[in-house]
Length: 315
Image 1 (cartoon, rainbow, N blue to C red):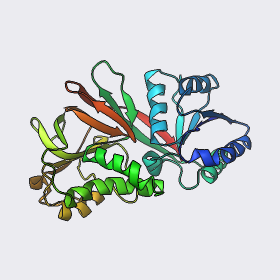
Image 2: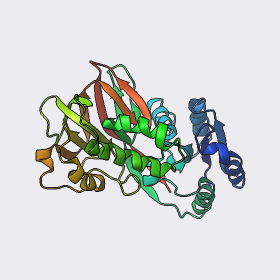
Image 3: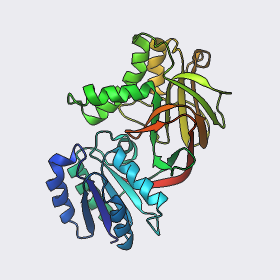
């Protein structure tokens, strides 16, 4: 049986209380190599060591940010001679990736059951395209799966300080964040200035030039959390994009359909647009949230997103 690498982010919110149990489970399987990191420090060395050990499965116990960091380093630095399978173990502040194509339930039980199933050849394989986000021409791309901008950025900051800080469970907190960003636009006083002004260009894009926007959401995942999946555009591209215009119109009526990814005949006239594409580039100034991590975009920095790499997940 080929070997497995288990990377554990020791700083992830859930790992701190279950680290000993995770390591105990891993020790029951002789072919599992475990490594506990202080955040993502040492991730580069760990991936290089797993390549030398010829592991064919890399398990990542952390949140979306940990998984993003692992894919980014593995691809940009060409860590693996043969691309391994990946397993997302939900242990972080946000676990949108694991909710779609990773392990479910208690991380301890999920890891134990997965390793037993893997030994019996009873695992499922799911492929997802990666979003390669490049901010500015000189920066290397960052690889992940879910991006939001505009009012979504403010909603994530509010969630970190109010929803998650008060004990909301992880998938619930993320569902409330996405839903809250949309519902806040329905109930709050309209801001005088748009949260985002962006010139977005891609195949199937409905825009021609800069547009004021309330919110932008993008993903290559097939489902998010708690039934929230605000994408209804058609097409064969791996990248799903949804934008809400500014000022947001009929938000109270639109919110239930938007959250379920269901189009309405009046959406386009009211500024609700969704489409699929393979790549996108944009010019704007602001902050995006990419797999739970904040990235600033300065004036003049072009943003490009490509879907040229795939990830093989096992669960």
